[in-house]
Image 1 (spheres, helix red, strand yellow):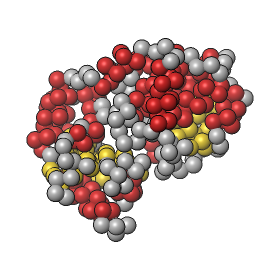
Image 2 (cartoon, helix red, strand yellow):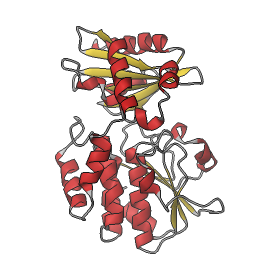
Image 3 (tube, one colour):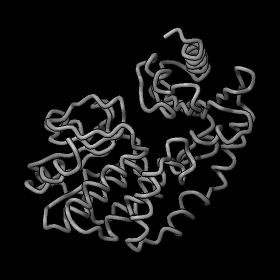
Image 4 (cartoon, helix red, strand yellow):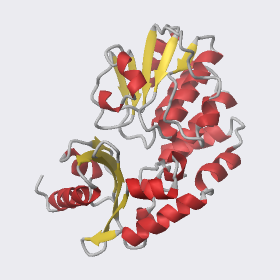
Length: 316
């Protein structure tokens, strides 16, 4: 499927519900909001499934778009979701009736009736942009959240996944007349004092492997509770360790209350992050992937370091 076919499908539907993934980031929320705005612009009834996990930084883009409790959709779309396991709890009733999946993850499981996946795109926002512009003229209301999607998933265009196409899409979104300066300041140049404290503690507790090229650090439950940190204080924390000079591959461990740890892996070109996480039941992109490991952070660290070494030595 291509963007023209996806747009034709959407044009023929109404009463559309758009799903985002759990622990939502700027890409999934921006795609959902941008697509919703575009569908409304051509006269469709479209809503987002309420995102209970959206942080304060992203809440403004969802204003007026979250579905009322009595909304009964006739067509269901998911954006930036690679597997049904990434659906939040309130989306699980729709697991068996997703009509269209729009995604950029190579690990997409093809769970929808129709799947539109472009695995070479840095952000799902690049794909949704093509669908939106096929539906009709690009409006500022749709362009703003799509810019959030593309910019946040590329670290304001500095991550290794950024391509020439990413910049072309961003330029087109800027030309729609959006307040991108405000977006960049909010998402890339503003940190809470709690966030800076968390970064300092990550540095203090960090361990280096493979001659200093691999960095691993954990955000523990104790740390979050002691600092009274909110989710917005931890936004995109996985990108932090990779800023250290000499570090090529970084792993950020997030301890969860259910006795597991969520691992976010960011790598340079000589290590496939998706292959590393696949060994532990996860997946993602070549430079950014994730997985979940049972046990405490120390056990998670041992497990992920072993997986990294296995992939680096070509034992997969």
